[in-house]
Length: 441
Ligand code: LLP
Image (cartoon, rainbow, N blue to C red; front, side):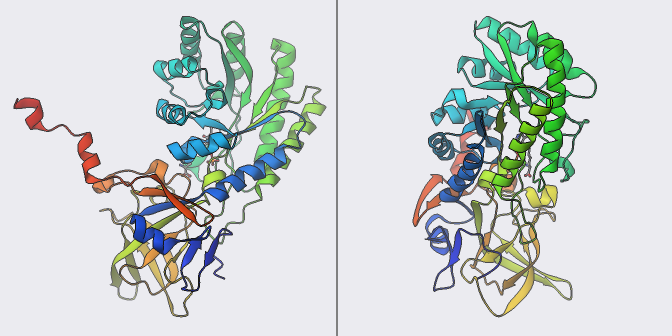
């Protein structure tokens, strides 16, 4: 068995890659490429892993899926069935979630620059909570809730001054950050005092997100200790009650064989233990625990299929093999130097192999998907499967070079169905306004 394959993958007797019992070569023929394939059973398994571990906690817990990792109507519908909560960061994500009939009271609204209208939509739709990020937002939310004569629960987003060991662009818990109220300088206290005077806003707890693709539990333990210490102090000074402690997302996944992430339950168990330990030490009631996993729910469940096109050998240096997608459907290698692995879906195991570099189709030298991948010799029209592309692939996709965004297919135990259709050239025209229509009436 090829060591690159994930647990939900297998190879059939024709040496072709199957995901959850569905032949990926047939998927590529049926739906075209590039194609995102999501294994729904794996998404459910990841949720279940968190749920099972948190079921052992005395107080309530919420797993709030971070929509930014991947959102679609069908995914939101599935998540609604799974009884998880949802983190949205824009009116657009909120709109799609509501279209999917996601229960509004399980939606949490994040973001460092929510507009007045976005806050209004949140309050009008009676979402579960707003994670307030700054003083301007507090004033806007106060105005919105007063105007609409409504109440809103809020968490205070805190920048705890704890950065996780990860890529700088995806670290968000350090002090010098655009997100949240700074813990060290007294901003959080100021926000609590201010919010205490706003009868329509209910502060229910604290939120911190320390970063992404984290492989250790100590960052979570450190932030829990810090926030509980502070909360105990604020309880005495301002009557603040930590009903909810939200420790964000960031749980690491396997992109390549080099990654060995912890099982998801290990993060959950460490979080529970740390909360219990510090709450008991500081004599405060146990808070509800909320988390916001994005990547760890959908990342490994997603696989991208591409068709091999041209190739070019630079003598003595490398062979470039080009595929029909690239940075337009997966910006992560170009943006973060993210590493991926994959196989030829139509020739998973083969004795003759070579080292190639997988180039994208966009007109940019940086559009490389994988450097130095050992593969059976790829031929024109071979299907390349790139693994663990389920998070921040489609959600960060663009139409660079007017490449239509790929379709998304869901698979589950031998079945496949379309979740998002492929963009067409005609879709491009839907937004365009011709000079003829504008001026030559
Ligand atoms: N909660 C908050 C407040 C966040 O800012 C994030 C991610 C998450 C939860 C979910 O983190 P996850 O569990 O997915 O790691 N585009 C980058 C990742 C940006 C993450 C931003 N915030 C990437 O492709 O790696």
